[in-house]
Length: 298
Image 1 (tube, helix red, strand yellow):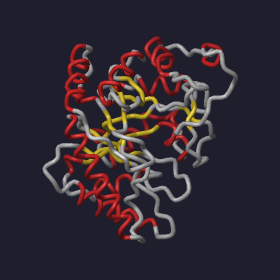
Image 2 (image 1 turned 90 degrees about the vertical axis):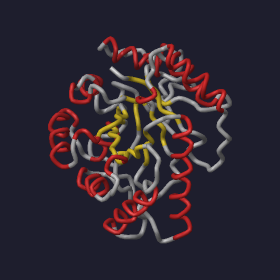
Image 3 (image 1 turned 180 degrees about the vertical axis):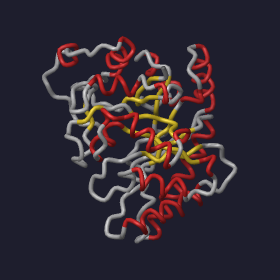
Image 4 (image 1 turned 30 degrees about the vertical axis):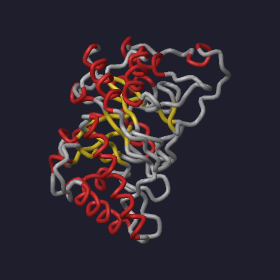
């Protein structure tokens, strides 16, 4: 199975990301090319990238399975402020160029928030923006993430995702990233995940699913809250998430953990071991000798 987590992209850039992923026992990972909440981006160091790719090859980590995530500040849905909307388009274009420079094939994007405008107009804005972004010779696929429906988020249901995907001219450059916490919080019963995949296949095509964010949820189904929990420590439950992880229909899809830190510690090695061993670990907190405070994923 292809399993990893979010990793840092710091001073050592991609090399540091690979080293961190290997320390977790992962065979893939997801990264931002800079801080997700600001526009500062340091120049990519080709020597660090070269070393990272060599280390990946030594450890059988395929570049085809690596996922980049676009920063949260991108909002393709709202066009009330034309300059802000165009900024989001241009920033996403630049992120794609950075991803392509590294050699990564996928970048996950949140569809955006419609704020005070209508949902239909917002969805059209996303489509228009992505058609401009993807109107190039880039070979990076944009993956629209399924959202929890918090506030005025777009992408909260299959119909909205379908509208966006079907509106893209370059179909070979558009895909989808499922997020289990978001699906649960949007109202999807993940105990019936096969039914959801069947519905997805009929409406969009299951081949469009290129990434899966595997997270538990702190909230009940349909809450529209978007609060991630550690595997088995939320309302979805470990067995349900394990079945999703093992689902043969998504065998070749990279699975990425975005679960919260336990205190100041990353839990990913333990959670990856849980999945590999198909066994829930009820002692996540005591393992790190911390109190029962999972923190909030950011």
